[in-house]
Length: 227
Length: 249
Image (cartoon, rainbow over all chains, first blue to last red):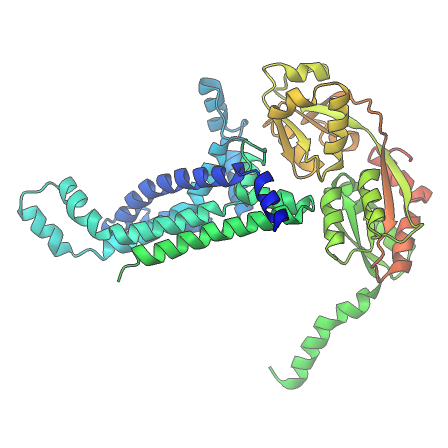
C-alpha cells in the first residue's frame, strides 16, 4: 500500500492534464464543425455531397499513421501551408500540443457529424414549420427549435468524440512528438513507460486512463441517451 | 469445400511451418536496418536450409520485447549498456556475445534550408528551436547524445528544445524533413540521405559506439542462431557492413 501511495505521489500528472486539455479543445472544434456538417448532410443536397461524406468519415477507418503522415505532409515546414505559417506568424503545429489537437479533432469529427446528422434528421419538420408561422427567422428557428430538439444526440456524439480524442495516439505522436512536459499526452506516457520497462508506471497510467474513459461513457449513457 | 480439398488446404497452411523449421528471428538495432537486410540473403546462401527474418527497432525497445518473452533468437544492440542489461537479467546464452561493428555519432542538419551550424555551442542559439535526439531511456543513440552533451555542459540548457524520437531513424526523418534544426544520428544513418541531411560534426565522445550481438537464451534454434552470429565475423559480412559505413569493432 505504501508503494502505491509513493507511486501516486511521484507520478507526474502533466500527461493526464494535457490529454484532458487536448481532448476538450479537439471536441469543441469537432462539435462546431460536426454540427454544421451534420446539418448540411441531413437537410441539404449539394454537388459532391455523396463524395464529401465518405471522405470525412475516413479518419474512423484509416490507420492513425496515415493521418499522421498526412498532417506532416500538409502542415510540415516544407509544405506550402507550413511554410506560409512559419514565414508570416513564426508558427508551426509540428511538435506543439496544437498538433495533437488537430489530429484528435480530425478523428473525433466523424463521431459528432454522424450523430448530429441523425439527430437533425429526427427532428419533426412540422415543429419548425409552426415556428416559421410565428414569424421566426430561419436562424431563430434553428437556434430555438431545431438545435434544442437535436441536442441530446449531438451531446452523446460529442462525449464519444471526447473519449476518442482522449485515446488518440498514433497521429498525435507523429505530429506532436512525445516531448515531456510539452506534448507528452497520457497515451504517449504509457507507450514510453512500457518501452522503457517501467511497468508500474505504465499500469498506473493505464488504470487512470481507463477510469476516465469509463467515467465519460457511463456519464454519457446516463444523461444523454435519447429515450 | 469438400473434405479432401479442405484437408489439402489445411496442409498447405501448415506446410510453411515444417519448411521454416530453421528460421531464426534476429532483433536488431534500427541503425542496422539496411546492412542486415543486405546480409540476410548472403547468410541464407552460406548456411543452406537456414532462413532469417529481422525485427528492427530501438535497442531498448527490443530488450523489453525479449524480457516479455518474444520469440527472438539473436539480439544485436547498438550499445554495450543495453546488452549488459540483457546479460544481467540472464536473457542471453553465456559466452555467445561478440562485438561485430563500430560506428560514430554525428550531428546533422537539413541539407536544404539548414542554419549552417558549426559547433555544439551553436545549438544554444535562438534560431535553433528543436533538436531531435533518440529517447534517452531506450535509444542508444539518445544516450550517447546525452553523454556528449553533458560532457559539453549543454544537456540541461538544451533540454527544452529536445524532441525525443522513438528510434535513431525517426531522428533522421525529422531532420531530413526540416522539422527540426539539428539532430544526432550515427554516421551510417546520415550516409543514407546525403542529399537531405548534412553532417555538421563528428562527436568525440568518451564511449566508443560498438555493436554487440548474442544468442537469446530462450532460442529454439540455437545452432542456426550461432551460425548467424559467426557469419557476422566473416570477411563477407564485414565487407557488407563496411559498404554501409560501419567500422570494424
